[in-house]
Length: 614
Image (cartoon, rainbow, N blue to C red; front, side, top):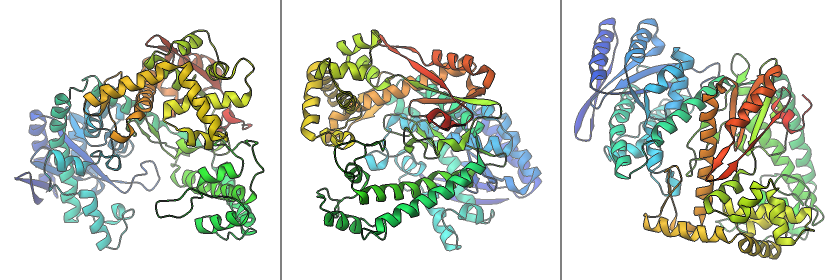
């Protein structure tokens, strides 16, 4: 037996690393007694983050209570694995920090199904996110184990991740290669592995006490754990990758990047990543650039270049100016290069041994609780099919995409009780066209509708006149007039914003969502409360829909959630019935406003729902 000690909050804690069968028997005896006293801290060490990649390995499984941890060397073989599985199978409750990762690791590499472990888990990251969802860069504590432990357990608690990175570097490894390369017997590796289990065991009761002090609604805890479980099962299922198509696409994107880089070179830009070269060349072409970065350089990011190329955010022609060929070339070269590395090459790198890729879902990523989709899927252009064509439904299946109908404005109408908007929804009106008619009259144009749509979404997502002008290509004065008219035809929105801000001020700059979620506000951006409440509520509309779908037996078909879209894979002959059931699960009233969803059945590729022919 090897034992390592560390002082934590004034206590001497011990980390045991069994070496022999007798050591393993001592471990299982301890675990049996400790599990009677309460939940055990649980953690894993692995070779990296790509759980489903062919070379990924589970290295250790560690268990702990407030004073003692045991690090079991899984990769040493059968005796060690049997001891760990004995405790995993029989302990009644565990505390894990960022449980979906460990659920999937143990499901994939230890044979312990998510369905068996998740109901026995308290995820301390979920508890922390319900207390304060902000990351450190936003002024919050963050959701990492170190800052949470420093606040709630011991200010001097070691940062095990950073500490191990230093060890990796001293051994000639990088942060990425060290997890696989370090010896499993390294003392610091074992000490820090065990400490994470102890920290999780100590952290959970502290966070529950804080949740009670803040009067956070108790039902949020099981609700979030259920969503995390369901999304982990969806991630495990994965989706088929069309490897041959993706390899071809990677080559084509590389060629496109080079082609447009050569166009940019004609204007003196030898690197499309050089802001200085681009701004100088644009100036020489007669373009006026005014925005600057924090260090004083002229901005030439996408928000600046798109209007110069006469393109909107969906890369469609705006029709307000002659496109600048350099801006167009830079945008297209950078996009092709980014798509190649971010999507095509990553898909090929992370595909598992059965030809599937697994897009992780972070169910509590944003301050508002909005989910984040893995594989950078949330940054895909809304109308593009090239990348999505790489992703296939199962053999004999087709994809079903189900999207909420105007969810943002329906949520706004419900929360702010916007009378005209509610009437239009009840009458089945096109909300954006209805708004354009109120502002511009019955003979409104498609451009008027686009501007009215941008105004509504700007109210929900917090976009100001400058941002909306850039997105739509409309002159700033037209945008300002539209926003003023929007406030006149829907006065309830501004009144609700003021009321919500007053309530938040009285609550310590924290808004409370309809489900009881805490939404901290920044004092200099209290107007963002409309954005936060609408985004958070839309997220929980999606969350309730996911729970409805599992209750209806649809989980085996679900593959992915992205924005407000649900992606399902169903046998071709059953697709219509499955689509109807998904629509039912995503349709229900929100404070009297009907939330509705529309399913679309495609072909075998995800891209078929966006114009691809397969």
